[in-house]
Image 1 (spheres, rainbow, N blue to C red):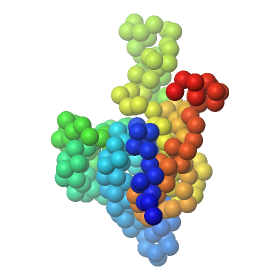
Image 2: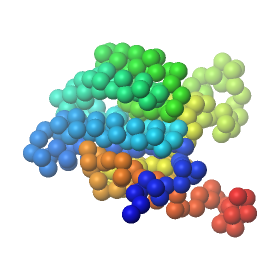
Image 3: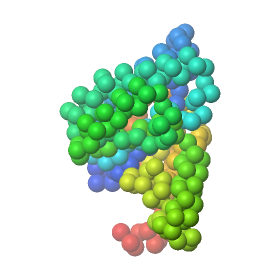
Length: 249
């Protein structure tokens, strides 16, 4: 019997996969443990999915790690998440280097605790020459913040005479935190929720969405394979008709 991996067309991979890693808290609750226990176990899924994407040949993997809204969670959970991020960046640096994976981050990093910023920026600097795949962490990120941040910078540059008052799409995307990153072709959300949750709203315009009931700490490579196979079964038309797409191939 063929494995799920064997069913994947490696010539038709999404170049960029984005993931909303949801369900850590519910997973911990099912185990009778505090929410942070779920976050810690979610690191295993991060490691496996990152390595699997690199092995397949995916070029970019973006993980929604901490939103601007997450600051509203209980303070002990937020503090634990920040400490866990520092520990994870330190412990997984060797894995990133061994797999030739570059680390990037998007979001308002200036609002993160100093130790978290330092650990993150050090890892980004140490992996900046890696070329196999780029792992992007969305930290203190929200799409509405990103769009407003871009608009304010555009207004400022317009006042300074650096750009004209007429802004086209190509100019606008240069002001987004994802300016050097292609838009995701596939978005995966775990835990059975069917929401985008303020994530990459501008960039997801033509992204295919895959929702799974699997809680993030239980998400493994076979679940990723299922998402990729689902993606490859769809026709991506970008506003065109099926006939136009088939004749352009």
